[in-house]
Image (tube, rainbow, N blue to C red; front, side, top):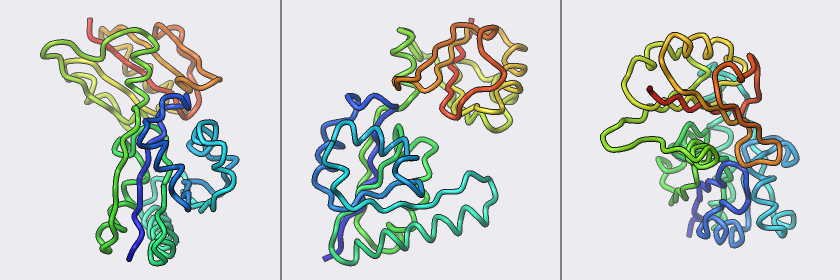
Length: 227
């Protein structure tokens, strides 16, 4: 009997925001896969470890995930990661793949999930609290009201075309593109909020476009609400 792959969202950073289902799955899975070559460098692992101290005693499967947009490099790394996971699934062992936030939102996990599912292995996705929901709660604002739409944008790509769409904009992982994102936002009438490392110990909050620096960490998220 083949093991099951569990794509497990650990939430935005605060270990108390793990769901009960994620917690039980982490505790019961013998193999923990992480999207990093070292668990000390894996944010998702560090979050889960605070909630599940016995995690350090489990078998950790490090998977190299290069930070690149090169499709050939990405495809190669995803194929290699899936093959590593399948070795344990073939032995009947369940694998819990830890991913920051929610597995269905801009997560590397989904590429691996698609390969393994296509290869005939049982798979389960366990949702986690998305960073933009945690950020809205931190700022005590709504993301949308009544018929107002929400547009989620990867901030590391071209953003201008999306900013003309009505409603709230969520720009995720702007990072080193922050200066360009700020320039694009300045052309529109928005109330701006930005959270860096939301719910983590190193969290920073900004309440206007003027406050936001031109460079920030990878886990920077902007909420732009139309005025």
